[in-house]
Amino acid sequence: MTAGKGSDGDDQAEPDPDLKNFGETVKAFRKRVDLTQEQFAPKIGYSVQYVASVEQGRRHPSVKFVNKSDEVLDAFGVLHIAAKQMTRRRGLASWFRRWAELEKDAVALNTYECRAIPGLLQTEAYARAQIHNVPPLPTPEVEEARIFRRLERQKLLTRTPYITFSFIIEQSLIERQTGGPEVTRELIDNLLECGNLPNVDIQIMPLVSPEHAGTDGPFQVLETVEHEWLGYSEGQQSGVVISDLKDISLLHQRYAKLRIQALNPSDSAGLLMRRRGSL
Image 1 (tube, one colour):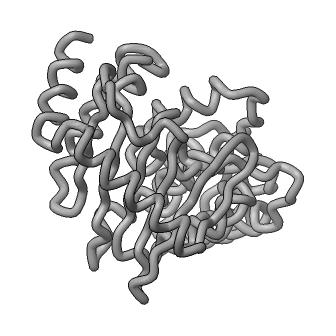
Image 2 (image 1 turned 180 degrees about the vertical axis):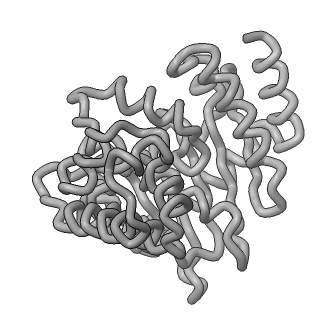
């Protein structure tokens, strides 16, 4: 994701050579169990046209399609692996890929976000609403790639050994109600659920904050397995991994201030529950 927003925007200029390979894999497993497209489609809840488009490499499959196909075709998890390979590059913006790789091996990850809910905490409905809000509108294939990659990244929250996560999120992101009240209620439920994980702290920065160390914008800092610290900052159509020790020190200072200025995790959960009750 955008680090904060889920920077999994697709680099549309770069082709995805794995899309056709995925379709051929589905087709091979379908034929292995002796099912026609007409027989297979209703078993997974999709149209014959949808199945055909995926198998021909013309359509990016949804998360549900991958899950149901792997189950119905008894594919031993192969389709899940193929889907990850397919979206490994397509679902991520080019400027975010290095940071996404660093996330996988992180020991700790601290995120301050003031633009949109961090991608690691988004629901599918919120992610779709956010994608639809930012021009240009993606093609269905690109949208599905972004959603798939975003949801795949969220597995980091429960991966073991645990990554220690800290999120500081502006209350205004909840008040905005991106996608409407129903989407916001689901989002709040997800934030509360994630905040209950033993390795995740979520803090809300209240609307009225006379002292605020985050006015220069969102950022992230992570600790690698080698106990080195790196930072990430992102703007419009750009992102940069920060390694300069002086810059990292500044980000640490700012994040430490933000943690003091934001509501603590318990009070943040209380605020989220009150906001949910008012929707």
